[in-house]
Image 1 (cartoon, one colour):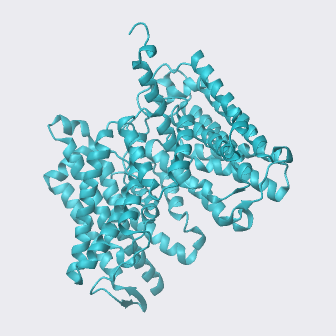
Image 2 (cartoon, rainbow, N blue to C red; image 1 turned 45 degrees about the vertical axis):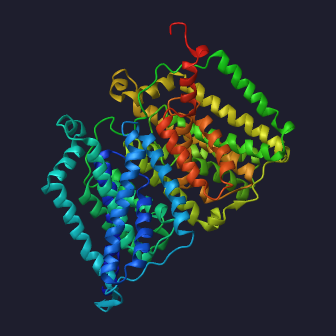
Image 3 (cartoon, helix red, strand yellow; image 1 turned 180 degrees about the vertical axis):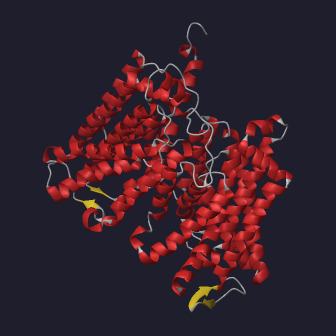
Length: 618
């Protein structure tokens, strides 16, 4: 009994920092409706700034002063981010905001590397709270007890601020109805800035206060990012009490999971989130969002017409030039072109459900990785010929997409996106931990194509035919009655239902088709590289897909393809530099603010204003 009680206390202590960070994210979302992926970066900055301050402010007073000053400093940094990056895109679709905050992550990562270096730092022990006390015969760190005592005071302070002060009343009013607050004459811009300061400061406090337990490193932003989103979603987006309950639940379960079921620790919180969202689609204490408040990709540009003859001839010319590449360029460029085509097909499959269906998925890499692993497993354990394994790979991804789509499509917006993330993480965990079958972290190797495709040039042409064929198939579907029904489901589900369209069924079928095409891309990938590893199913792979769809243009059918080609080529160049994340992050932020229509949309807009691009009526 003593051991169980001590583990419970450890879980409550771990929940302290998690609640601080998650409460800030929940507060920001509740008012601004920004799903801030850079919130983990504020947590990391709080840890590094707190560490630096503790080096010059010794003693107990210096320690706690450093924690508070770190929170204030991170709050100020949050204000700068809000004014320069987020304020210009508050009225933009949700995907644009997500991509903007992802750009902030890349910028802050390299700035932290530049200032503090690549070495991890060990946080100092809290003065006066060193050592342990024994409770029921079990040792419990004194600092853990201090964290357990501090957390309720923070929760009470936030409750008092939001319920007993004029600022809190305005914040709660903005959470319920932002338009009404604006109509009453409240300056929403500065209200949003103030809330962002508080949310970022809470994240900074969380990073600084955990220093005696964990220190600081350059990966801690991504380490905590999934956890805080899971906590906020389980508790209910915008609910501080819900965030506290979820933080305690997740932290306590993780502690017991490490002791009694260590294999579950990688996905335990995602299992909990999937169960909660299945029972309560908007979290424990969340509320149902207004229709259309989340998940939209912007006003539709109707009609989306088939490409003109000029565009078709231009595409044919580009394909012809691509076909000539092996004869005019070194083999390196042929391999790079193969990678570009594979990524273009993956991005096009994601764009099919995102751009046409308005379904923002954070777990699309699960289908890419499934296609790759199905092919690799068939070749490794069954001795299946490459041709048959290649055909069965998208079937496996298709079946997985049917299951995940059935579970997720009763949700919408952020909740839909987070449930796709949770289920994708379950797939990743299965692959990562099933060492005897999947190879675990070592992956599967020696997965090569048949003899007639072993040559680099031959496989390039094979990839070119399959990849371009898959993209054209998706484009054909977009212009078919099915594609128009899918867009109707995105733009106005209620009106689409009134005309006889079964919107959920249409979305489910499109989700399965997109998963199958992502599986085709995965099969092309594994035979081109000869190996596959769990990294191909990770969250970062899905985020790469979201970024390229945005960069190319969400509202254009070719956006995913163009964005994937552009990002792959740019990354191949800029990753040669030490601070390439800084350059890429700034590029993403600039595109969000200056060219929100993406590459294709901006080029179309430019062509419209050129003399030869205007119609006679203009």
